[in-house]
Image (cartoon, rainbow, N blue to C red; front, side, top):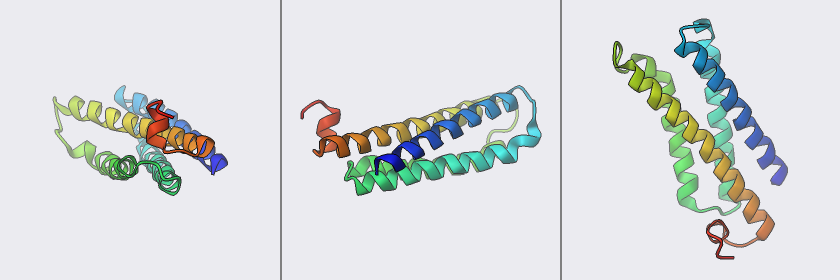
Length: 135
């Protein structure tokens, strides 16, 4: 499970980097023809998050963290697919910031799940206790 976790963690990291670069281009009104690539890559990032959530569930990571990742992935996809239509005009920058923060949180959750999976496999104890230093 550790190799799969590492691959998925890097998948999400690299997808996240591509998302940030493309998002920065779009924010500066450049390369707008790449928006479909941004959307596809965002979906791949979320698939990586969901795959990590599946591995985390199999590793018996706390169910609430797994559920949060699944729901957060769905929110990320929904916001990404619709954010261009939300608050058009002068206040659209708010939606852009929220979109950025939701994406960064998805990347962070993937990293946290990967860490918990690795800790669970390495130590064999309850992951919540390892993260809090109780083991």
